[in-house]
Amino acid sequence: MVAGRSGGAPAARTYLFIESRSEQESPDVLATLGLVAGLRDAGHDVSLFLVQNAVTMAGRIGELVDLARAGVTVWADDHSLATRGLRPPPVPDIRLGGVSDVVRILTTPGVVPVWH
Image 1: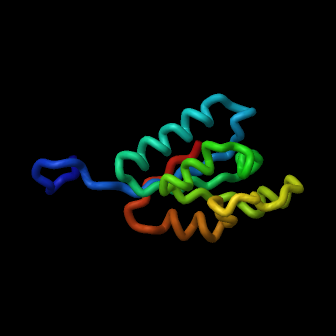
Image 2 (image 1 turned 60 degrees about the horizontal axis):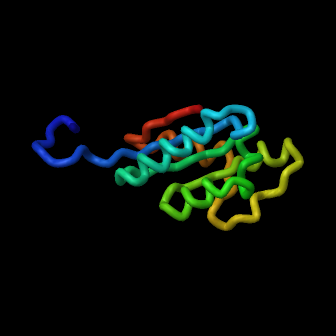
């Protein structure tokens, strides 16, 4: 419950998940995607930013497209893609972004960052 509120559901929050690993590196990644989906289903505003090896999942993992279509803003880091010789994902639901986008989101008041 949010302080100052009486009764009812807690206020929606805004989350930024930064994922740096692929599901092939760690089984935890799919659990994190499940957490992202659960928070979105609970009415929270959620963004998921894929960096480092996590960009290899962009356009390959159906769960990411499902998250985007459910209202999660899914980003793939342009620098991480370029350094791995990968092209931007051919999926219109996944946005191409960079460090400036992460900084903009992180400096938005009330955003809760979660790095995995």
